[in-house]
Image 1 (cartoon, rainbow, N blue to C red):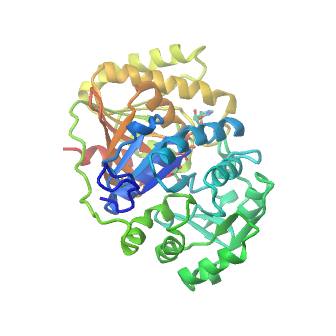
Image 2: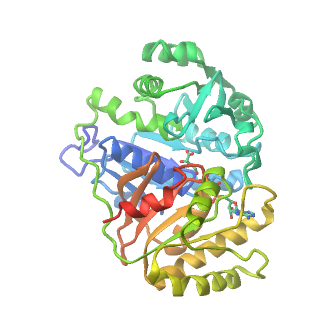
Image 3: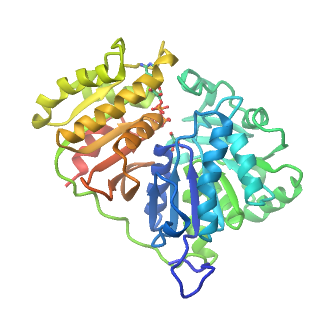
Length: 422
Ligand SMILES: Nc1ncnc2c1ncn2[C@@H]1O[C@H](COP(=O)(O)OP(=O)(O)OP(=O)(O)O)[C@@H](O)[C@H]1O
Ligand SMILES: O=C(O)[C@@H](O)C(=O)CO
């Protein structure tokens, strides 16, 4: 139960609205907030203001805007924001990738500009640091498991290659407005020092902020919990429930919801070329069946038919994996749309064949699969690994769904996730 309802006595309003630029990011945030005791809903369609779910403390809207043109990303983000504003939500978090995935012409800067303006906010912090998955920021430079971003493998990303670890520089290429830095030496002094640094940066609407660990994120959450707009990875937003409780804004601390109960065949669709997914595919291949998409097939329809012909006879014998055949090197960017569409078609075919437990690896791939399957909302369950919860669709047929960010999860993630289910 939240305490800042604008209509006491009427249905409550979620305390926090989160707009995520991809579907695995939405699931990442939602899993963390649920683990921190918030009641969370994920929507993949922008709800009508009167239909905004009220029985939650945080509402996460998953968009597929990370890799599209900036003006379209702005339009879709504002379209997600407005009904939540009209429903009375007053605090927002713009969730982008903990590896800041974007190009020089978009999308984080343009969307932040638009959200700051729409919310009449003076400033937003820019905090991708998420130490639970090895993302830290020091002197404005983003590290992935101790490696500078541009040496972490992200420099080879097929859609958003990240070739500069200096986030002030990266964001300054995406917005005409000044970008400031709140560095480590300030953050370690705690919330009051962070607030005074934000005031000192009053001419800079965006402040990249350093964080190396969860203590730093707790300081940042305490300093920024009252801001209309925060932005970053899941790290800072997951620190908010405790800060809200300390401020008396959030009364509940609910238990982490149950695992999904869906029964049926199990499958994995991996359309990510990220290092972690490549390791997970190799681990799976040691003992279990997999199929690489035929990337020379003329159309997504044909590639999906071939994959489903391979999959159907095997499903009754145990879980199967279908992947895009990428090892992270030499990927041909022109194929990415075709692969995404193929994965969506395969997902529909697998559900028709009785699959009810589905893991999808990759943010864009998850977007494509979820859009093809069409659930509007997900119930969030417990986390499998940091940033990856099991979720369950709320429509028929009920599916257990795990949307895994490309670079998240242990090497044995696929097996571990499926073994968790009852
Ligand atoms: N072999 C390949 N050749 C070219 N493109 C590929 C190949 N395999 C995958 N892709 C494309 O690369 C993109 C990978 O994006 P996706 O977001 O699914 O994974 P990711 O970037 O690793 O995940 P995340 O966004 O969660 O970090 C998709 O558009 C996918 O279709
Ligand atoms: O922040 C992350 O790294 C993930 O939630 C994500 O957005 C990957 O697509």
